[in-house]
Amino acid sequence: MMRSQIRNPKSQIPNPKSEIPTPDYTEYMDKKTFIRVFRVIRGFLLAALVMGGSAQAAEPDKLLPNDSEYVVTLNVRLLLDSALAKKYGLPKMQEILKSDQEFQDIFKSLGMDPLADIHSLTLASTNLSDPAKALFILHGKFDPLKIHAKALDVIQTYGEVLKIQIVDKARYYEVNFPGQPSFYVAVVDASTIVASPGKDAR
Image 1: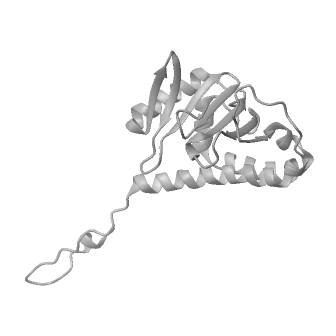
Image 2: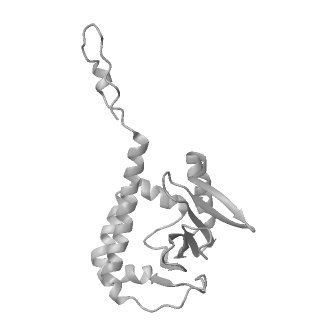
Image 3: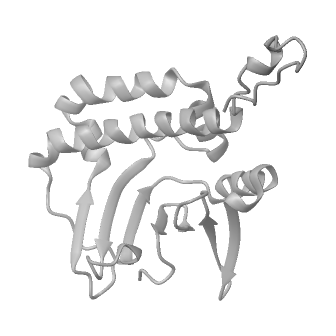
């Protein structure tokens, strides 16, 4: 936002410094980070659309609610290992990740290679009319200790953006972006992460 222009009441000569905009670096970095995340997610989604016809039936996930109305599972490992994805989708995603040092640092701190350690993603819901009932189940290779250490670092740096909650000895993370509904994430074990926009999705 431009600062208010201050004028000398006698000379009416503009103060050059007053006309220099003061950039909101925090907002800029948030938008920049969002764009990077969006590009990576978009790459996965485009690859999924291209390869969707080759999806194979999978056994129901044990974490699925019994009264699920909607279940979609994407075999990420099968998708990325396909010849078509290796030729068209994977190189672009690798290029995006390698070109962004901040992304590399984040995934390194989490002990995760997103193109190798994510095996499958399942989306389910017990009520399609209620977004809070959506449940995401991510299977792969994860490091719970490194993820928790990164969460503590985020809390120390950004405060209320992330909170750690404990219910019946189970730990989960509450993510709060300004102006957005809360999102809840739990690391079940070294091979499973679950997330939902509602606490009672399951």
